[in-house]
Image (tube, rainbow, N blue to C red; front, side, top):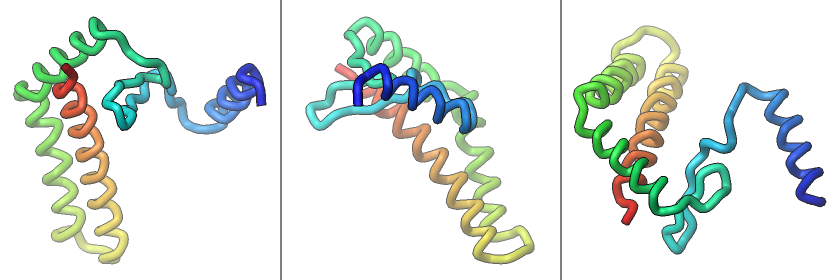
Length: 112
C-alpha cells in the first residue's frame, strides 16, 4: 500500500472513531528514540517537553489530577454498590488511564 493510500485510510478511520490526533501520540523505540506522531523528535522539542513534564509532576495540579481519579477508582471497585465485575472493570480502567499518563510523563522526564 502506498503512503498516500495509508494516510487516506488512516484519515477515514479517524473520522469514524472519536477524534484522536495521531500526531500527538508518543512512542519510544528499543533504542530509546522518542517519536511523536511517528516522527522522531529533535532535542529542542524533547527538552521543552521534559521541562513541562517535570513541572507538571511537581505541581499541585498533577497531585489533584492523579489522586482524585485514583480515589474514585478505589471507591468504584470496593465501596460502590452494583455488580462486582462491572465495578472492578470500571476501577481498573481508571487506574490504567492514570498509569498510562504517568508513564508518558515519566518517559519525557527521562529524555537526555
